[in-house]
Amino acid sequence: MRIFTAALATETNTFSPIAIDKRAFEASLHAKPGQHPATPTLCTAPITVGREVCAREGWTLIEGTASWADPAGLVAQATYEELRDEIIGQLHAAMPVDGVVLGLHGAMVAQGYDDPEGDLLSRIRAIVGPDVLVCAELDPHSHLTAKRADAANFFVYFKEFPHTDFVDRARDLWSIAVRALKGEIKPVMSIFDCRMIDVFPTSKQPMRGFVDNLMALEKSEPGLLSLSVVHGFMAGDVPAMGTKLLAITDDRADMGAALAEKLGRELFAMRGTFMVSQVDEVVAVDAALAAPKGPVVIADVWDNPGGGTAGDATVILAELIARGATDVAVGTIWDPIAVQICFAAGEGAVVPLRFGAKSAPMTGQPIDKRVTVKRLKRNAEMKFGDSFAPFGDAAWVHFDGIDVILNSTRAQSFDPSLFSALGIDPKSRKILLIKSTNHFYDSFSRIASEIVYCSAGKPYPNRPAETDYRKARKDIWPMVENPWA
Ligand SMILES: [Zn+2]
Image (cartoon, rainbow, N blue to C red; front, side):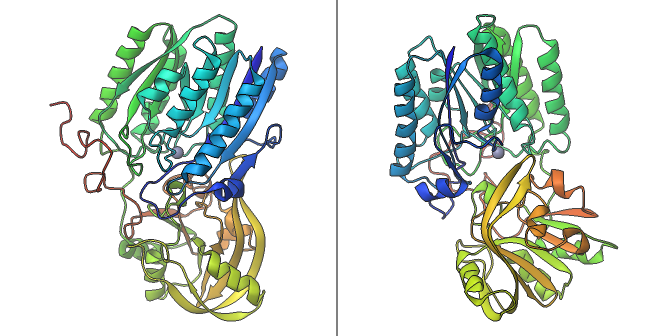
């Protein structure tokens, strides 16, 4: 067997001011064929798992390029087309192949392309023909379009949010692919449109139980190969935006459709109950100051670069400063200009510095302080599960009992190691202010005395009923109360 694999992925917040070009991919991941590191990243585990599987089976794995850019705004048209054509050219050269196993995200939007993954998959299908297996692993924060479903044999999505299971799901993907290539099964997809959009953290109920049930059903239902909730991505203003339920069966499309509908309606019945409750910045700082011990983690949940925002909002930091809070560490605020100034000044320098809140409206005002540059680090990284997330050249600055890590590659706060990377012991601080919706939870909950979810300013379109969509459908909940009427 000859299997082609590649990855092309980012998550596009179409409302974000941060445009994405080739350099953004190169800053995060742009690995040429054979150059992908042994450690998988979020959307490239099909490559690393594929190496193991093909070695075991004695099959040939032909690697194409793997590209990932951290979530941001629209991808430049020329960048998408260049990256797509790179993979398409590699596939042409690799022909004939028996299968194509891809790592995608599913929420990419490029200038001129509302559905880049659908475009890529249909071009791949056109090359390999109708009989070659085409499958992909995707992030559930994505748009499942008819074009994609038509072009591929099957998709496996991460089940967990935080996405702690991206390697496990790549193993599921490959396990189904291997059985299909050996002729043991015929995977077919059945999709149910849940007519809703919501946010579904699996670290708490009711989604925890829902996902546990999906995994139990996968083991117990005869003929069922895989179940996924495609959460959807409310910051992507595209026609297919919304939540879907996906069942893959061994050639039992009707059974899959019935199960997808049953589960999809269960999910719809729980709409609006999935997110943790959030407080504003005043209540968040009240709670942190009142806590008997630290570290209290305040998560700035909507200024999450992982959702494509700039990650430079200052609303909560300004509240901490106004209240005289000390023993505070902030990680991170994105400000490449301020980082450059700190590098020019050098460690130990005391400089007047303006930082933060330069990129988007409703994210607060820039902070002006005389700061001490405590530590500088080129190409800083933090842990994310078994892999690493880069956050670029970074500066630790100190003023008035507050330590702030300024970074130059946007990254959400995955792990407390972002603090230790600069020499700050996160466990020693009373208050840690971080930027992440939910991915932080797994690692920060291990050191936090308390976690406060804070909704501050309006950096992200997190209230779909109020969002000014131009392309997304408006006949789903919560834009309408009853989309089934
Ligand atoms: Zn995601």
